[in-house]
Length: 78
Image (cartoon, rainbow, N blue to C red; front, side, top):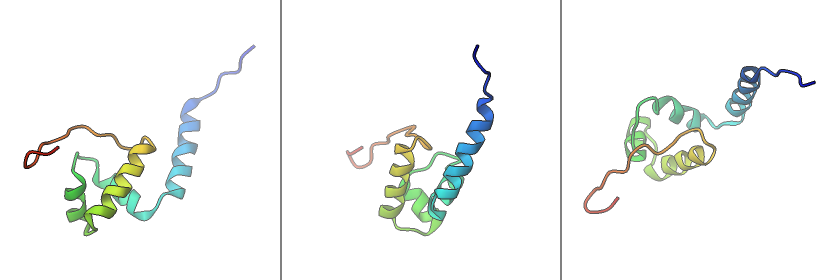
């Protein structure tokens, strides 16, 4: 006999734990990423260095909180 588990409650608990352990910059990045944007664009919007934003975006990507949606060539590079 298996017991039914409401996964929505588990997701809420996970989200609360993530939010509590997340740096203020990462929370700002997630809010700003409601619309797709590059790390350079986010840096300008948030007044942070491009390198710092890029690091935190990559960490959010590793954690499955953001995903790459498009790569754009710029000056012959991607």
